[in-house]
Image: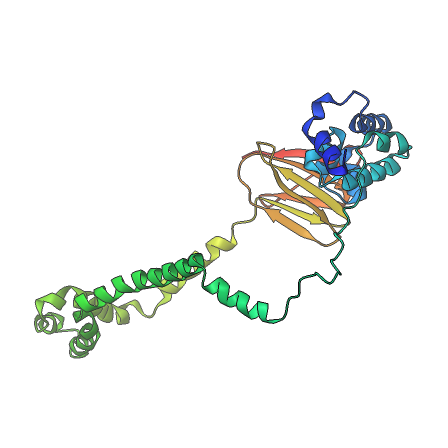
Length: 302
């Protein structure tokens, strides 16, 4: 049986593994040593999900047999145990060899002209031509309605030239007379312009619009992220949603910070609780008091 077939058999039949499988040995050794799986993942700088997959013999979640054996060996070193019994239960893996290059006289010869022909052949393919036609058609469809609207409303161009002439001759005593000289079609647009021009001196400037603009600009700035992590030393964090889906898993160095705005209930694990500050909706949360072995676990309710 080849290496690939042996690896496929190990992936397809995880339920037939005996109780003394490689993953079971690693899990028993870790529990006996009283070490959290997050601590091992942090020391090895690998995702927690990879070590969990190794402990439950879920080789489908691992890249290949070489990676699984290397990870198992590293976990054994972290637990200070002999790796030989664990490696003996893992499928044997070997690096795939590259095919030998054909060097005989019958080897095919490729000159540099194939590259130039390759570009022309790609452009001549029906799929590429269809994509180009669709893009051109989409551009025409997007431009055509605006052109029709411009052709159907030619009066919109002449409106700015007529409005200043009507507002220029209007004063505070005769706004109605100036509006009477404007055609009925322009009566509605001109009325707001005249009222704005007449009310501008009475308002004494544009203080009110400026204040409203400042209030609208300050609204987004007042919204703080839902959860913020700030590391005072090297640490790591893991965030999962209510369904157990991994939202964030990251290692932070001293001075780094990261924030999330995920809605719903969040399950959070923080390694090095004494070197990490957590802020929930702008309020600092004390995670050191509830931490076990310097690993804090808590939830953020919606």
